[in-house]
Image (cartoon, rainbow, N blue to C red; front, side, top):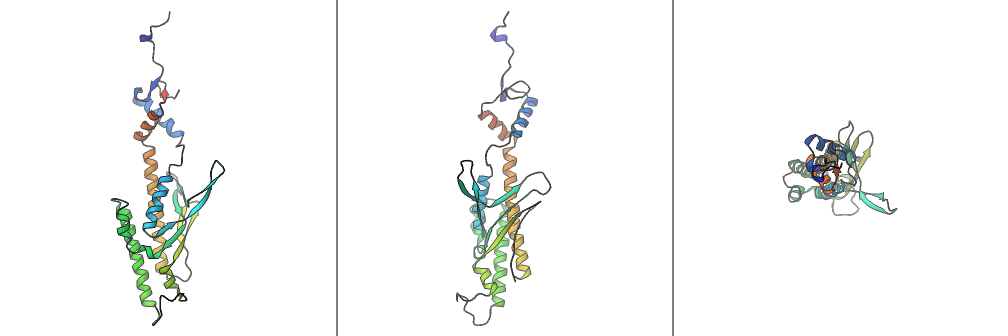
Length: 234
């Protein structure tokens, strides 16, 4: 004899109908499947915008798409977020002239990001450090607007310095300057490296959000997933 429809045992459940134990199992399985898109794109785009405001111009690299076409992509690499050696690096150029006034430039873009404010302040200090050295080292009577004047310290202030990203067992970002004063090269390296750390923190925060219960729950429900009573997808 068949059971009345009203008394049939329920075998299919929407996410909100599961108990907390089954929800946790469903969440874990959902996370195991991974995020099926390049979730870091927006973070890369924002890093490129912020970098430009503080004198760091992130370069691009050519990426092969599944369609066979290619596109230019920010030259940023990372690994994360719970293994030894995880980190982030990028390649590009450091535009010394743009360091002047970069604190005001970032304030309208990054909100209350005190870490970025502090980094931008160091960028301005680096500019002042270089400018002071130029003033004290500049030969008497030299026309600094003369295009044939190629003293290293003067070139340093008016051109971009290459930033190298190196992906190895860990991630490093640095500049490599010939004949540069050691204190200026050290300050540059700390500046560009700390910006890589800032990018990594943005990536980590985005990853944490995408794997949070709140986000996963909404993603599951938006995909109209059905489960058994134990939280296994049907």
